[in-house]
Length: 206
Image (spheres, rainbow, N blue to C red):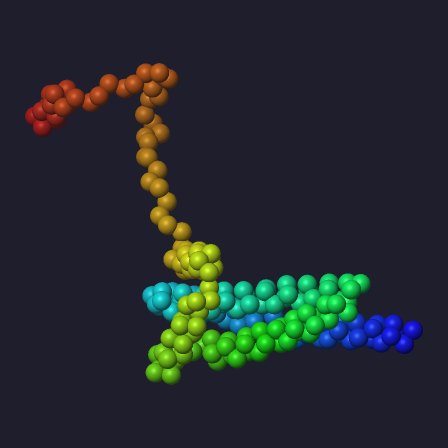
């Protein structure tokens, strides 16, 4: 009985730790939503200013944050499921390792992404801001997949359309509403220059 009670307590503690970890993650998610909204605004401002390079950097940074959070959230959800496994004792080490990994990723997000002031640096022209932009660009270089890059390009194109408005509409042919209708299946004879010449001469003579 003592071993059974001890085992249940360990399992309950692991579940509690996971829930606390998820609460932390959700706090980061709310913060990231604010940051990603700001990054979208930065991208929009940079596009309006004609700076496509910095607009792209802001959107790539946003994509990386969303990718990290989605990955960590899925990992913690899986760990919660594992704690309910009847063979909890066999996987307890994996759960502890998973918690450590989740904590590490959250710390990385906090250290690498910073706050609103870091987002605003993406627009800066100072030496410090330019150095930060290069640091972010180098960091993202090997961490975003080709599919992510395609999605970023799509979002950039969408923002460009939003800023520039829709393209020109196709020209609509102008017709004379008072012109006599041509029966279906018949074509009007071509207007020959030699037929118009006598009329033009008569008008000039008058």
